[in-house]
Each structure stands twice: as C-alpha cells, then as structure tokens.
Amino acid sequence: MKGLREEASARGIAPPHIVLLTAGTVWPEMALLVDAIITKPFEMDQLEQLIHRFLPPAESC
Image 1 (cartoon, rainbow, N blue to C red):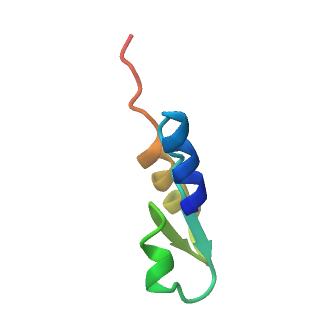
Image 2: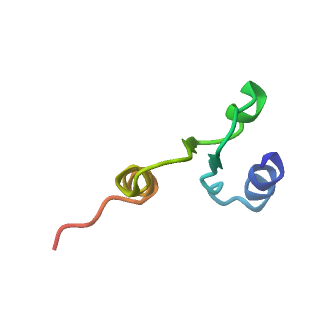
C-alpha cells in the first residue's frame, strides 16, 4: 500500500484510493495506510456508499 502511494508520488499522479476488506481484526498500523475499511459481513448499500465516496462528483448537464 505504501509502495502504491510512493509510486504515484514519483510519477506525479494522484494516489489510488485503498480500501481494506476484512473479516477479521484490523491492526492499527494497517488502518493508517488505507482510506477506508469495510468489514464482512457487509450490506451492498454500505459498499455502494463507500464507492461513491471516492468517485468524482457527477457533472451537471
């Protein structure tokens, strides 16, 4: 995860959003490296909300 961010920085591009999907405990060190965490079991609306959180806003026509 850290490598992805470093590579994006080196290339001068925006870093990718990193979402951790887990069924277990998340180590605090790991939580610091991600943009969001979703735990199993999850509802589809939770996943949708998370995806929309990282999408750019829709442009009005």
